[in-house]
Image (cartoon, rainbow, N blue to C red; front, top):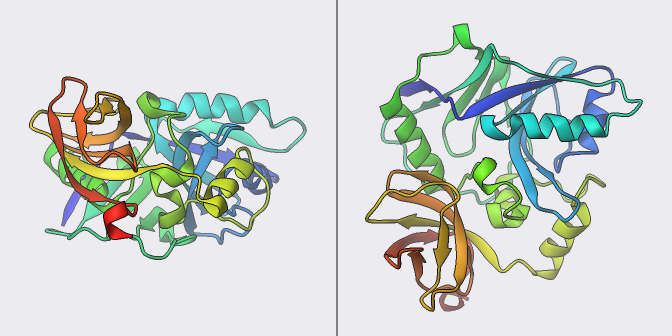
Length: 278
């Protein structure tokens, strides 16, 4: 079993008697009905349905803890506070809290087949569908950072198709391009939230023409790297990377994918149907 602090993440606390109702109206999952000591995936979107951040929302009594990429947390807080108005809700970036990942040794990739809309999270230990556990707690209660263990964690999430939006990729994709409809990040019967009409239309009219793929390169990749097709036209963007392995949003029609230097990338798995598989 590997254990490590994951510096990629930050923790935001939402409190106040209206915090669940407020977040329910802002996020893509059903926060009002989230049971205590449970968590859920969700997205925070622009009005045009572009994902500003995807996150885990963990209910801890009367408050909600939001886990998201550290480099988008300040922007998310700023945007959320714009809509508080008369609601009794307060937000705080918890500098003395963090997130740790635990993963069984040699854990195989686990692919989402049924959306997990609610995840058990006793005492902040969130059991993820891909077999790992995220623990949300004060930094003093978490294990130290282990770079090798973090790399193992990142590779597992990439191989399983669980992306994380960071500053370099914010507003690059809609929820379905990021597997959120597969892993349980979108509740399609919960009611309105920013971007809801766009996301629902994409789901029910089949208008999404891009999706996630696992890619491997001869050279290291980074989040935000642009990708091209065989003709040199734009074909996608790297969402997460660990050395030469990446999780990227790519055009469904792109049979072959290249980096901007023209070097080919091996497509290890597509999380969407291709013409050959239909």
